[in-house]
Length: 295
Image 1 (cartoon, rainbow, N blue to C red):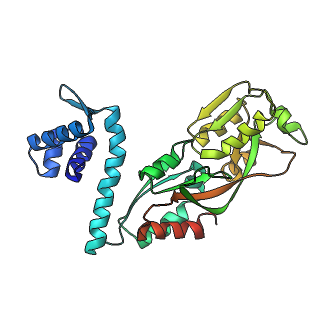
Image 2: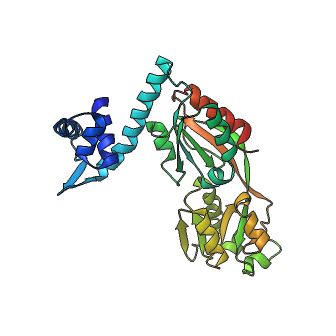
Image 3: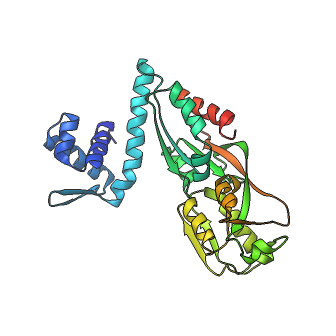
């Protein structure tokens, strides 16, 4: 694929207008159309649906857009770095659990952006599954998970610390009135699971699986905030990082179920592909995470 054609595709996909894309690229609309057609023929897919005057991305176009943006950003970063222009700027894509993004990252961002003004960071949620594949393909530069292991030999991982986890439910829930809770106490209960915080939800699924019994229901949410609200409403039991529920415990809208085997916790791991070129900017960001993320 020609980088010029990819740049054209990204511009059209962003503006969803061939005429405006031509003006942005200082090119005739016919030239834009020819470049898009060449890209579609090379990939043997349709990238846009043209519905009258409307231009819409196809499913294939949506997939290509993530790669196209990253390649365009890398080209721009390489040009600036080699030419010595605005070398402090950076384009970095990070996938991170909502817990870390909301409660841990601000100090790192403050220091990084102060050192590299004009940088662009894309922070994406760390949904269950797909992270290692994105790192492998280069769509994502760096990933973070709340888990105790990484099942991929081509990934490098670094331990940054631990997050304490809590089993929680609405006050008055039978589990919160017991002195201790074990796997059998969870059997058959409705579960609330977050898909935005990666792997620690598997700890709860693993506990329930030990009983050999299916949960009554399972509700999966893309937001930790939604999980907290549903748990407080008495809709089920969940597992959440302690950092995320301090306010709810203080307000007594959630209550902790004490785990018999002792505190639950998940490791905070930083991940990148073993063959990833770590640019100076990415290295600076990683160093700040090593030092300050878990402060």
